[in-house]
Image (cartoon, rainbow, N blue to C red; front, side, top):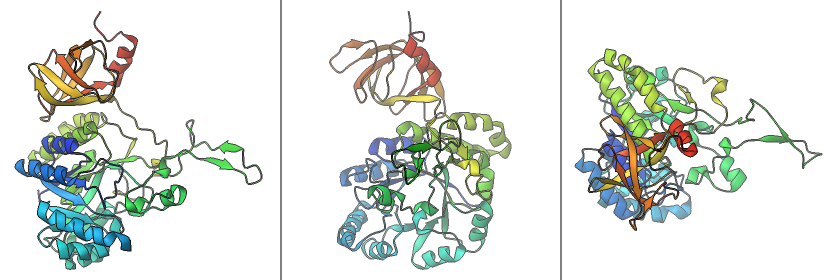
Length: 419
């Protein structure tokens, strides 16, 4: 089947890193508390990063750390100290976009692989060759490339150089993510990890002589979202991605929940493995992949630039859709009871689903809910509350509990619960 393929999964917190590892990632990418383009993610302290790297390595999974801001002069001293710290932590690679930061990294971290971020606008094979000459092992391709362009890059770069490409997740209106809208409108720079996502906002028109009159512009019945892209999804095109010579299939989402990471990691893991086992098996299971990938919060899907210029219909309402509600991750077992930190409301008697790392989805009923003081509860109304659940089916630590939106609606009326 050609070059081996890596499944690279995001992790915005230690809990999500563990989920990514157990649900099928070959590698995870994380951010520290500085120099990462996801400043609003929980990110990792030094101690958490050390523990996360150890956990991943114990499971045969690599860890890449993002340091992909565009640095200013005032950042450089702290960045040098940070790279010295990373040299001691020994992640498998650091992802960088700024040439100055690359120079500093090579000085401070001679024993760690260098990956070049998509933010560096990597759109041609000469750029890939340039970064190879600077010591980069891998380059993350620009999102604006087609599969035929990626294949041409593969044919014109050294065989030991790796191509990493986003295959799933949010798309940015800006060129390779380099955007000034957030900085201009809110003084928070996307290139320094503080993006407020103004491309997702709903816009109206104002006529200059009538400044207080806002006139809505309608693309559809929901309004206008002229900058907003659909989400990327290539689950139906694993063969084409492999044939293009891509080494790492990257899922976007360091701001996303454990449910999103588990669903995307598990689904792409199965799709890749099925295709490597047999292309016929991959085709046979396509319905499962498509159904499963819709169970995490997402916008409507597109194949982006992979097959040419995206259809203009890529830009529409930015509201997330999901067929399932995230209830929590099983963090421990208390006898037969599952312990979770509750994410969304549910009731005693509800029918829920236990999502397991091995691909199984097991229906279960909530028999009882108990709080930390031992009080029995009819519902779980408070987010982040620690709860002890008795279910009619067995579950294990790191299983994810979710509930279909249809069941949630029934639960809200009482018709989904035991009488």
